[in-house]
Figure 1 (tube, rainbow, N blue to C red):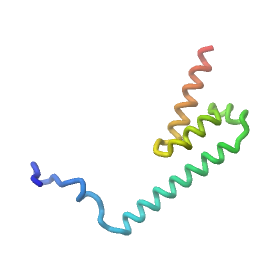
Figure 2: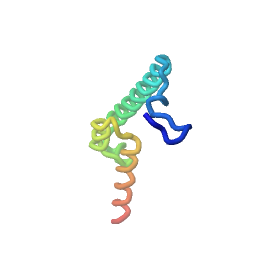
Figure 3: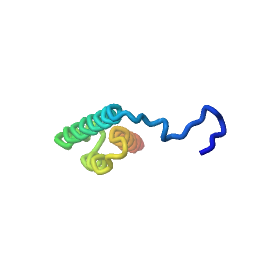
Length: 90
């Protein structure tokens, strides 16, 4: 593979080949996913009127659970903001 500049390198060489580093990244990713699942489960346990106070619905939480690839916090925040904007219109 030819490089244009002497400082360029392929993306494959940027990845650490250390199995310990790869395991540490996997562990951190798993920890964050578990934390997010627990937070969403806790929200699902709340009563509907409390969720309404937060500006989200149970369906918003279920949508966030179904799409684990997306950032659930940002998704719920966007839904809350949209609901708040529509509330102020009336």
